[in-house]
Length: 70
Image (cartoon, rainbow, N blue to C red):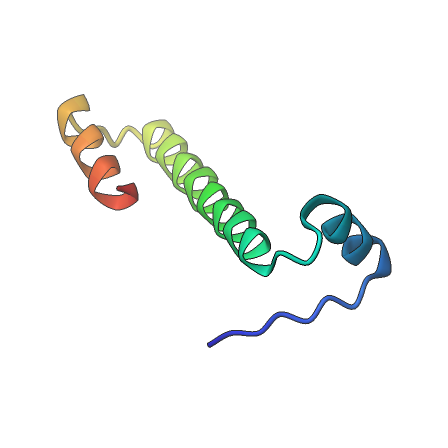
């Protein structure tokens, strides 16, 4: 299990204003954030691959994306 300690009063205040004391909502929001960061990273890698002339058929790309994020 990973525990995250927030040592920033502004961030803590913002979290409490948004989610109150509902820890599960905070966990869910964090998971969504992590997922978005993974998607952004993957898009950046894909753009770099296209710039390098690496290509795969769209059907294969969509299949890989679905399997990774479903």
